[in-house]
Image (tube, rainbow, N blue to C red; front, side, top):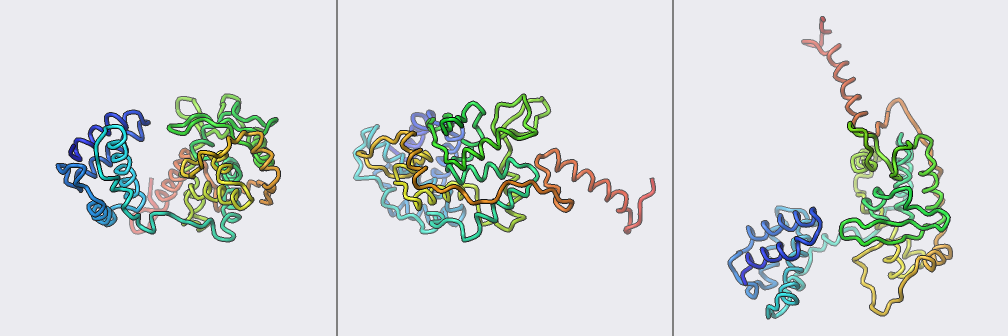
Length: 336
């Protein structure tokens, strides 16, 4: 079986079962691999040396994370070929390819003071939802799409449980909430300006059709961290910081994986099943309540902190109007 035939079969049999985003990503990566490697060579001719050269070539034109995704696709391709297609190969050559040292990502958490600076910057944003989302992720380790997909019915404050729905390949699960997380969720559910026509915990502005979608977080988060000079922080660092804090508090790897739903943590097959009630007891025993400052909303004239695209559009429109009044030829006022 040639590499081209194997990739095409992998797309049809494996990638078809993934989400639409996962399928499109695999198709794009498969085309990239066929362009960079000799697609006519058979799978048993692809050695770790060939993949190492491919990795070095890709690192000159793509980011480290993109090259890591290429290698993951190749690794899974050879695994499926040996286990499901019955091809007799000497082994998985992708396993022998040494990853670039920098592709492992940041191994340490946030620098001292960065966590407080980040939370304070999000608290000073005009929309209090941003600060609440950031704090809850640091308490629970939820993924961004998981916390934005939560509905009011998914939060059980009485039993301190959050029911996370199934999102793409992530299975639904019940997440135990710390005492600080319960307070934050209660504050989110009791916001004064919460509309009655939404079921989202963290809601956005209504669209032109009148319906509401979850809070648009990416653009706002980048704007806040840029102003706070925390550009080295990405959103996934919040989840990593929460997991590191759980380990430092004394939770085992199995308990951390059960709470956060991490698929990258290797758990022994003999590990016990972690029930949410037991995890609540463990959190109460080892997890301290947060000492972060209270959520305050500060609105300044210098930073209006517009929280939606419509607000930014209004701001730019006003700037254009002012420029028309004072921006005539050679700096002279225009005459209307």
